Image (cartoon, rainbow, N blue to C red; front, side):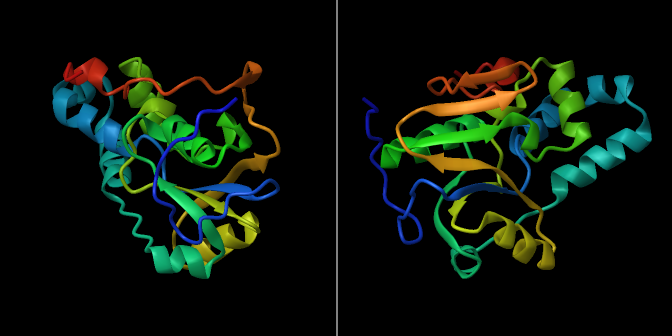
Length: 193
């Protein structure tokens, strides 16, 4: 049996099987920004100036989505992706409603520059705080993605709400199950556990 996670609902508080799971914004951004602040000299010695400029631009892009915009585009529930990253947000949202989910790690929105920094410091981008990133449940995820694109905001459908309580994920290694939330990966660099 899935233990319910207590939280106040966002939107209309609807999270039902068949809905799409949409990620608005980029995962891992706030964690990578902290890594860049702590280890900038190391990064500049490793990567060329053009890479660093592109990285800095990616980290400075803001995704400002209001609850009103989300609702107008069909969001019925959402979770802001913060401490512990997208995997914690997925765990919390599915746990709040006692519903299963399926999602693909390969569909997660993240720039190549952020991935390079994560690889250098052995950080899991899926377990890094994100900043302005939102996990959304919507009846018509592709319509929401299109509506956000028209506003200049990147989003992508990563999965679905399912019957039952299984939290299934697919990735390079096949299919597995989402584990309980782990400490945010940025603590590997900041030692603030």
